[in-house]
Image (cartoon, rainbow, N blue to C red; front, side, top):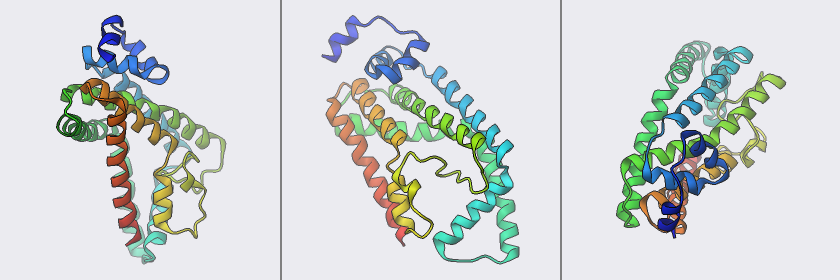
Length: 242
């Protein structure tokens, strides 16, 4: 059936591909078979990431972010740091925040390259598909567009509330872990926090797109992606519980 749709569907413009990612993703991924171009969604995601960075710098500041991150680490590990260790840790954490925010597009491309390789291997060698690495790369970039909606929500939170305890790792209540109190077990927060609405949406699109690009069954593609993700979540939870 996908082959018929591909023949009947005229080529899409770059803007149409972006819009259809939200309203008719199958059309976008069918068009990825024709062209694996991904420059427009990448620019959009990068733009929103820098808008978020600007809001963070303006409303919170790297110093406050670092202090909150160190406090969370101490609570998770149960180990308190001396004033000297806190000062050194804060300096290092601020530097890491600045570097990661500034180099985010490069980090995004690097992680996309790795995940795309895993997708290519999974869909081609486990499911017997015929997808290309470039097609999987494009699928992942287009699926990442769902994150811009969460970015808008995060920016809205930053500009509309008190940000003294802003958590950069879990800034908005789009997952059950967000609503746990500070006394909750760290592993439980990690587990429930993994079930983020936008993460699940993105995973669905990756499974759908990977299946269409590799010409495999959509149900199998979605199960492959969610199965691999669940394994990753269980590993994270196990490390958090140690």
